[in-house]
Image 1: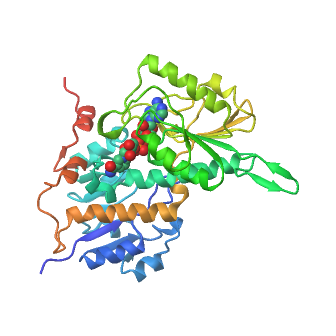
Image 2: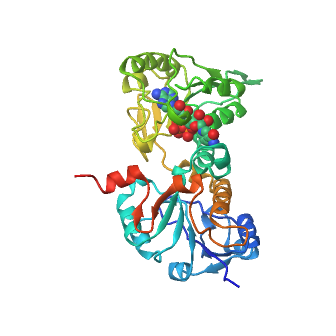
Image 3: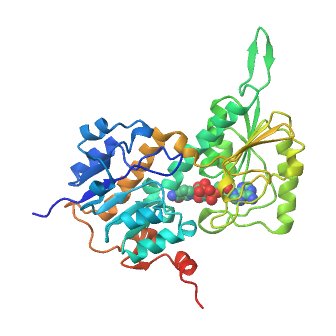
Length: 381
Ligand code: NAD
């Protein structure tokens, strides 16, 4: 009889990271499929999954990384490994998690040299069959929710309309720029809080989804749907038209949530500093694109600033602010992904032939398998 696969879950060490890559309910499922699960002491503490809950689900709690990695075949993580972590991983380990391919080249080089196998969740194709593994979507959903809560917290107004003995309060207007996964969740959340919601996206297909949530879709004579359902970059002329329309909507908003992104590129600037100057005092911008350059010209990643009475927040890692549910969703994504790696007999699949595995395989057997990352690491002369 072969021994069972050991799956190891480290405590996340990145500053501000409160999530954990697995949760007790998923441990139970992994155990049923014949795996052994090891969890580093306090790995789930910041997400309110205590060690005792993992133990009750059948996991073994270990005190440190050495005990965690010894004999482990698969490591499940949230944040990309650092160079130091890549050095700690035993040769041949399979790591699954976010990898930030373009922004973590030294650690990827280290994993390549140490013959680690790394699957990047960012590279899971967004096809129907992979929906249950789509961690970009689950975490964007968490982020979109938190963005609205953060906006409401900083807004000096009520969001809903109120009719009280002390007078009638008009509802606040929330503007959502970029109606992808995070934007749609932001729209739904702001609607639930009773705000008037307007939204805009360059993809015309987003209009129907925005309207189905009861929000107003701002129409522009542009349809910039690019490859794979993502947006393409606008032409210079289109950008001018967009700025004009966005500026008018920005001026009437109390809270603006910006989520606009183009894969592999700097986030488009939708709110210029001149536009900020036209905003209402007390208005709030939550710039979810802060880490990729920001949708507002004045955004500073990781900081909250004031400009002309407008609060501009450039949050980092919003999903970590709802760590309980963000971890639960992430853990389900990973469990689903693992069904491609572990067969019905509880053994590792011998070859990575599944299209989801081949697309997300970043490093394997001493080679960087993802072409764009390889081009960055090993530029041709
Ligand atoms: P994203 O994070 O890359 O971008 C966020 C949004 O910003 C997108 O809706 C994009 O159109 C928009 N945007 C880009 N430039 C803009 C601009 N200049 N002005 C206004 N908006 C701009 O996207 P995402 O949220 O990850 O998802 C994008 C698409 O992928 C959606 O169509 C979504 O339905 C689709 N998707 C499909 C699946 C699936 O089929 N399994 C899963 C997830 C997402």
